[in-house]
Length: 153
Image (tube, rainbow, N blue to C red; front, side, top):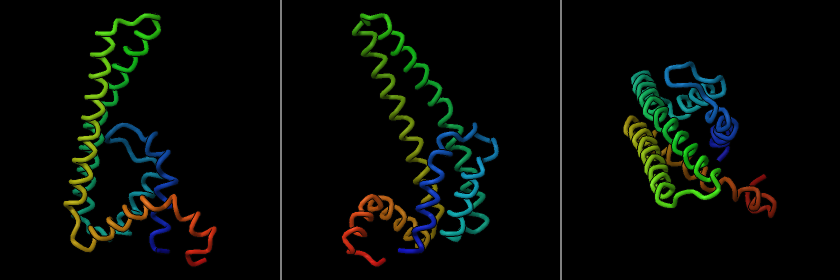
């Protein structure tokens, strides 16, 4: 469990920076670059895997960018309708459906990225990634078990 602590802490520290990262193709924020190196080291990625991942990351970011902009544009239209005081229900409904569809497209882009990354990994690396995913799901419960002395100190 101790070997999982560093990557988990890095993810916790990097998440806010990830939300503020620059456009595709721009250099990574230093915290994101540190997280990238932590993933490379933890999974013991070889150079070919790193290069493939870099391409996958850039494609992922490039696909996300226009969706984020479209979502912001639709949200602004929704906000403008509400600002009128009595939005047209049909127009509002269409915009909300459009906003949901764009959100779904964004999820699809992310799923393609995650599945693409996983396909780069060998069996041992996939198992290690699975451990990280399990740790992420249970991380919020650890303080309770620690407080009640049910895990090693």
